[in-house]
Amino acid sequence: MQRFYETVFIARQDITANQVDTMAQGFNQMIKDAGGQVAKTELCGLRNLAYPIKKNKKGHYVLMNFAVDSDTVKEMERTMRLDENVLRYMTVRAECLDKNPSVLMQQKSFKETVTKYDEVDPAEFKRPAKREGY
Image (tube, rainbow, N blue to C red):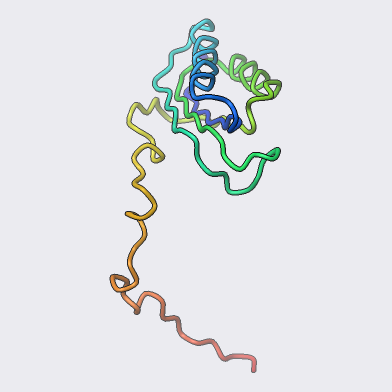
């Protein structure tokens, strides 16, 4: 039985974008060969990692939405685990195939998303003082 899945994987920083695209196409072909369908594949580009992974400070992010049986997902994850170019991967079950752009693709630059101090209401940060127990 086919179910909907979403996979994100991070590839090493020292490979080219063409190599990352080739990897993603290989995973897409694996899904299609198993009788599944791929809704979207997003190459989100080279982004900073929150912490170093295997001495990499950056990584190429790839997001895939697809429908396929669970055996193919296990085989795809096994392939990712054995591929030395894949730093991390995660597959989750989704409720539907989402063809809209992901949050990563919609995200503005960091400078545009930061709120200026003058625009913040100071009342949002006030908390009642708890002095009990002293």
